[in-house]
Amino acid sequence: MVLAFASFREILGKEREICLVEGATVRDLLEELAAARPAFNEAAFDDTGALRDYVLLMVNRKRIDPILDLSRPLQDGDELAIFPPLAGG
Amino acid sequence: MIEITEEELSMEELIKRARSKDAGAMVTFLGSVRDDGIERLEVEAFREAALAELESIQREATSRFALKAVEIVHRTGTLAVGESIVAIVCSAGHREEAFSGCRYIIEELKKRAPLWKKELGERGEHWVGQDEPAGK
Image 1 (cartoon, rainbow over the protein chains, first blue to last red):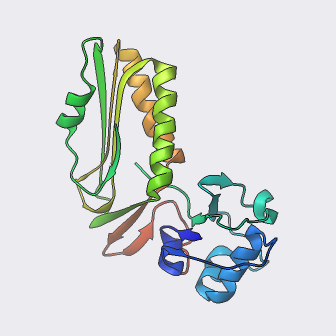
Image 2 (cartoon, rainbow over the protein chains, first blue to last red):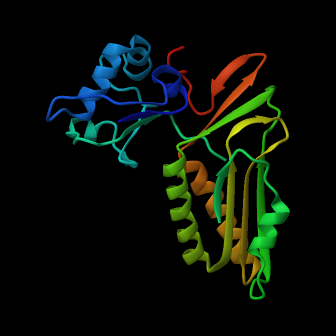
């Protein structure tokens, strides 16, 4: 399940289910979304294919490092949340 | 008590809930929509994750500053200039703990709670904190 918030919700919609091959990583999922939605590709990745620094991620409601944890494999039923910098209060 | 709600918030109600005989001091914080040339604000939450984070912040503040009670309400939805966004009430034995606790909670909320604000006005729309608007 992919959840998107704020500017990323406007591009991707609030939630969607995505089927991935076994062993797929967080990066694979983001690239799948980018391939399906050019606006997400532009918003989330720079020209070199690196994730932009305002893209924040959670897996199962725990923040992950958007650089170090992109190679993390996802399990069936995992929930990935994509959002820009927090701005509550 | 912690709430994320579209409803108006009542500081009086929060104060009433935080009162106790052993609390000699109560500090309140009210954040509201500032007129920065905007017409309104849209506030969005990752509700379940934000509630869990606010509960963690509440627990930390309570143990660090020996608070007697903590009330936090954050609003979501469309808010006009001047409307309240967030209210925090901390009660403690003495004022020092109540001030420190309240300050800790608002600073940590801003850093850690998954909440977002979009400013809307004549100059267009802008997600606060995101310099390059996604997809624009």
